[in-house]
Length: 216
Ligand code: DC
Image (spheres, helix red, strand yellow):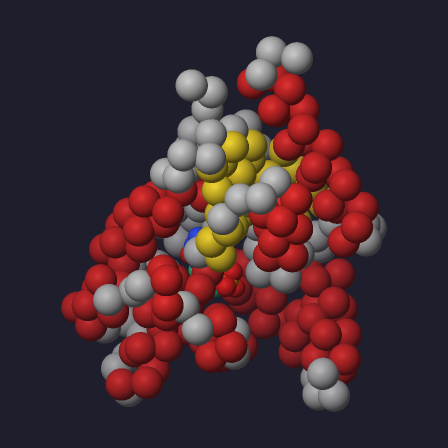
């Protein structure tokens, strides 16, 4: 039996890893899990009940209730929920519970695509392909502003940039499973790349790993 095609994608908020993960999942016909949604689901439950984000016992209870088959992307995508998710994500017991669910998803016979912050380092350290997708904070802020404006909203570049830098600092600075590239991850800096170019680069990396696996 050959190793399943597990693709682990990590990177900071707004680097384009979600889009890349969906494109790769489509291309290789693999199930995809956006693990950020699991942290967002925990944060959303705390917010909805008026519980503080540092309330570990309630956060643990919320983590146990996370159902991977029932993650409401529309509700969980709100910006405030992402910010809150980054705060509950520092609680080790929450990470342990969610990582176990994510690992169970990853263990599919044909493989899977998972994207997040600690997939290559903690959740799927044996993934066949690991990608670390990044872009400068300025580029990510510019993209976020363009996205907001495309949806008829408005925002201020400096505030968005400060927000991204704060989130990076929290996600990279936490003690448990901080965001960092796995030693064997392929780095993909999308600062100067279109999404199409990033997808083609990622596909070349995956095809290469498959050829090596299959001895071609
Ligand atoms: O990718 P996202 O913006 O949906 O993630 C929201 C937050 O969840 C992120 O700032 C940190 C946390 N997270 C994490 O700690 N580990 C993951 N594997 C995915 C997300």
